[in-house]
Image (spheres, rainbow, N blue to C red):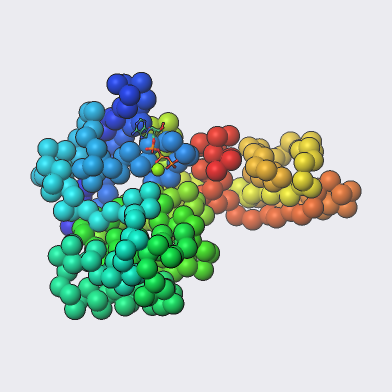
Amino acid sequence: MWTLRVDNLEKTYDDGATWANNGISLSVQSGEVFGLLGPNGAGKSTLVKQIIGLLMPSNGSITLGDVDLVTDPDYARQLCSYLPQAPMPITAFKVREAIDIAGMIRGGSRPEVQKRRDQLIEILQLEEWRDTLGTNLSGGVKRLVGFAMAVVEPAPIVILDEPTNDVDPLRRRLLWQVVRDLGERGSGVILVTHNVLEAEKSVDRLAIIDEGKLIAEGTPSSLKNDDRGSLRLQLMLPPGSRTPPLPSYIGENVRVGNNVVGVIPETYAAEGIAWAQGLMTEGIADEYALGATTLEDVYVRLTGERSATT
Ligand SMILES: Nc1ncnc2c1ncn2[C@@H]1O[C@H](COP(=O)(O)OP(=O)(O)OP(=O)(O)O)[C@@H](O)[C@H]1O
Ligand SMILES: [Mg+2]
């Protein structure tokens, strides 16, 4: 068992003009899948690049057990498998070769790596591209191959920066399963994602970062604690129409595109449904949905309007 600790981490760019990380503290344990969520520009990639030793913190510490990873970035790189946010060029290699090379660079033996490579190709349903050159792959398949390269011979810490970008919904689900398995095999996984609803099912704990600061941290259910006894009522309005006046029992609410999502007390469920059905009859709403609050509701509440466009 080990614990990675990030303590009061600060990172500025442009000679201190941009505070990308502003006093972030968190810890991740072996066997744990830890999610990092936050709006564009919040500082997530900056944080993980410091953990892996690609960027030097301006202040603060990153340790694994007794080892100071800031003073020993070579060791940090050995400890981490990393899928960067920016796609890696694998143009000159076939899919299976790229995955094999990545595994062997990490020190895996050829037969072991090939076995695991075949498993990943099968699990992620990449068989038809097995012998395709990197240049000829679609964006989503490239992303999946990058993911397979990062996890074929996983290091103790696996850092995945937006692994599901461009990936179709079915394969995203398969990918999340591989992420869960990595945790169960003992790696500590740090997962940066905008996919809040999917993250909710895949992470053990998560942190929400906004403007360089950690604004919430906990398990998905602990973060939803404040919403206990509440339901989410979502109204889908015709394109371009105004938000109708909302009844007083609808508390916090946010408009995202043509959707209005509000939180209502459970005791107002029947009234909420009747109200929404009335709006549909009048043609003010196209559809509505009433359900349990999600991590996305918590996320939108905490990060505010800026996240509404992501
Ligand atoms: N090399 C750099 N030089 C100057 N500023 C940078 C640099 N890299 C990032 N930044 C700035 O630091 C802040 C945090 O960026 P970062 O890439 O860590 O955000 P992020 O949370 O990963 O966002 P996204 O979800 O869009 O990937 C942003 O304001 C960004 O513009
Ligand atoms: Mg990023």
